Image 1 (cartoon, rainbow, N blue to C red):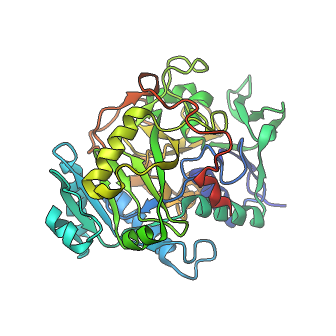
Image 2 (tube, helix red, strand yellow):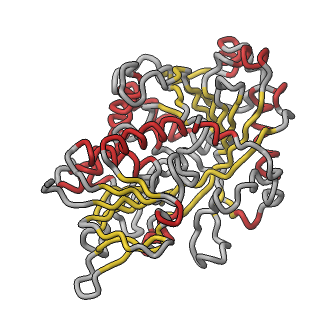
Length: 433
């Protein structure tokens, strides 16, 4: 019998999956992951075509942690992630509002001795990557040669399967759909979670890793976090176009969007950097909450954001600006008010922890973040990380925001409801293959 406590993890996304894997690897034999959806969970921000993998941060703690994760991604012999990393490089572009973040990332990279980070002019970009014929109007750009991308839905599924192979139990459907956290009436300590089928899943420790759904389960979290959406749009290229654009880097305008190189299915993904909240949900008055892909599989890109995304593409590759989208979706994440994760004890109840709030930059840490969650539970997390990821009770420190465009609410935008036909094949589901 294991002397380790039993653990229930609420949420099978990036933080929950990584935590399950590292708990099992460290000898915890009773680990249960509860999620409404089987891996890779539809409601996880990581269940996507691809995500940026980079080490560029103004904050040296994140830069160090990202370097540790990068070593895992780049290891061709890695038992889970071997040969998943696509080395493309990354153009970080911005304008007046985002220049402080770019400058901070550049300075941190140079302090760490990196020689692959340099400023580029629009003419430099067009010369180095001839497929990028756009004007890059008013861009300040930095190129990071170390960065790349991975097919994120596949990576999330691989790690979930590795955790299951080691003994973690995954429950989905009504059996995994957590409706509330339960507490002891006398002591107030957390004792488990109740799922939609009525089962009470008791455990010695409960870890809430529920991302954009966190405010529903922990109403106190509304001071720390709000659910925000980055809209994803996918274009289908021809073989000839894929060959033309295959060698471009990831190209990001921090105030507009991100363009990825095409993948092996000739799919080119775009991601808006102009996020959306959802404060008008009738199910959770007063808080921004997840607009679940499971409940609304055919909702997609608002008309206003489509117009903005096409202008962004025209700035890079005008020939693709009017290309039809194969499909679009809303990708929801928990955005902490200071953009830092929350990996800490929940202050309102014993035996309850949070490991969540990826804040639109958490996926790259998938291979390693669970290790730090386990350190936190066991009381061995470094003091600097304890402070960085502590519960802040709504009191936020100053920080550089890489995406300063004003947030809009879903209720103010148009054209997103039932955008897709019921028989369309959503590209992110292909990550299951």
